[in-house]
Length: 221
Image 1 (cartoon, rainbow, N blue to C red):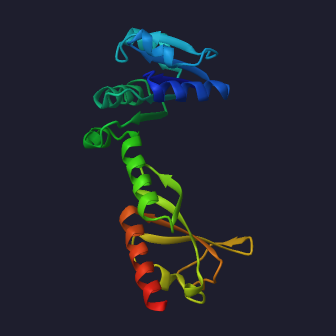
Image 2 (image 1 turned 90 degrees about the vertical axis):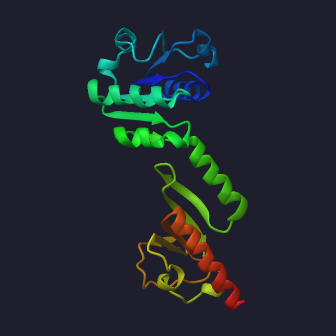
Image 3 (image 1 turned 180 degrees about the vertical axis):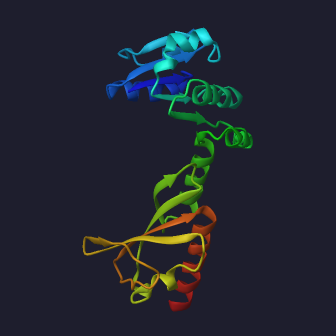
């Protein structure tokens, strides 16, 4: 795959090197020559010094033939515009943009860009680890708007159903594993102690589920 990375800071360098090690053709753009020093010495991708919005620089980087583009500079405005150009002008099918400041998220949404916000995602993960170690996140979609959570059913919930477990509209049962065998449950499925339930939920939904679990556990204890 031919991939162009716009921005060779720590994130850009790490992403570029990982892709290179997997055998992809990687081309990096950055207007600060010293930024390329972030790359490991054995990196053998192409380095393109210059402005990411320069047609000449984009041509040298191979934008016309790129399979994927990731704009990962520290400038949200540059990431949004560069990603939009790659998507709409050069018709690159797979375009990603880094959102550095959550307050500028609307720019990316306006352009309809696939966005990754390490700040928003990281803050949410830390909050969960600090306060909610009982329900573990196993998969995050987008920037954490919808996630997949793993819950081990305790003795207090033995014999109840998913309807008893889930009382919010923003939560859905995804799978139920018992004795190493997984099935797709519905809200009427009975759960047993030791079962592992996977639940899809929004951040607000899982907060409501945790509150519900705590309240019921206190009543049953």
